[in-house]
Image (cartoon, rainbow, N blue to C red):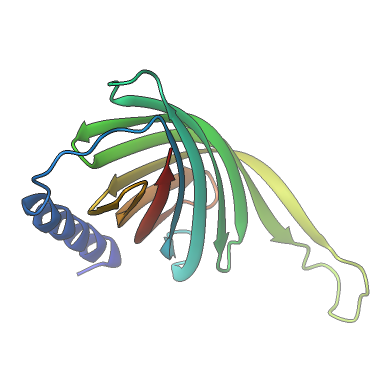
Length: 172
């Protein structure tokens, strides 16, 4: 069974199990500052790494299921990169959200034409269009804080990846 199939199976299982326990509704607060972190799989490099994703969202109205926001993401693996983006988040059902954030990824490349004795930093960044999709389930709520599983997929021409991890946020 491939890594992607395993990640999808685990994600669907976690979302299904946590939905059973999500019986109470929560009061929506208009602003959210969130952090997602976890294991990242790079399809291009066929390896695992780590990543962190920080975002801010603001609801479009008091009872709206839509929010607008921005993100910053960093992934550390053989294909290190940084991403900035802006987009929307939609609350599918109570506590289950999906975000769609197009942006720009700065992918680091190393110039291998020089020997390791060179004192210059030959690292170069290439900027590419990216599209980040994140699904978050707010399993636990404590006043203004929430915590739960997160699954995301990020497409960039030279460095697509997926991640599974934990999302924590402060709402106000």
